[in-house]
Image 1 (tube, rainbow, N blue to C red):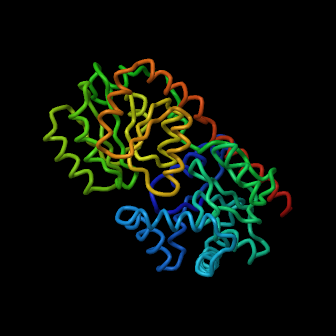
Image 2 (image 1 turned 60 degrees about the vertical axis):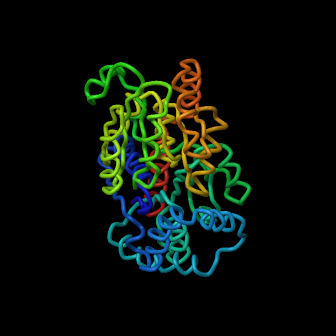
Length: 375
């Protein structure tokens, strides 16, 4: 059983990638992906989900302050403890009905709820936490979680420093669908199939799965490039953003294909020359595996700012502090083939195409141990 959270698409994408890997590792295995907020108190769901989205859009400085303060905290606050305990009690009915061999959490909130569940119920299944960013927040850390999958050795060291036994931590990378790895189809063939221009650079613009990134301003920046380009703008699940992006595309003096949520993001990543995006953990991990250079805009405070730092230090991405800097940064990448080649190589070096399978193998091992203990 995978417990996700309805704040962005990445948490569910990671769960689905591991589900697919498990089906190969253990043929006939059954998986279930559940939104953990359905089992939280209404106030928690609204504050953590809706409140989070509103805060990062309207008062990002406040969210950054709360994020950093929570990271430094040495004790769990009473509200969070109550929220985890309340959710654990609600999950009990589901877990008793489904009887999962392992519960896998792709967000820190259900990981905390399952830590409380394990403390309350003696027959609790093993719990695995999959961290879907390139830094690990203290909210993930619980003494009774059976396994963690993290993206980097630095994250592993951070968990060990907080008291998590080293043998419980797998440095797997962030799980992504295997099709983000290069396949046999050439870029020209992909562009023909996707209806994209075969000549000249093509820029991929993404505003995140919920469409809260500055997609329209990214699109308008393309008119100020020194190089003539084409573009694909993916608006995600935000219908309002998609409609507004289509309006902007009609007024631009260059070809832009606007899409809503698509299942085959990997095709567009392989067909394009550079990705302009806010640095969500899953989007960045997918681009790394695809070997796609990135220009990072407007990271959300907290985890996305840390993702930006990791990607820029890894030399596979450049970050613009203000959107006015985007045309210059993007032109610098597009006009220098050698630089793009170095960024592609750096991205491929950081990418972990087999992460989903490694995490799936960890889950399968814990399931076998659970079955043996029950027997």
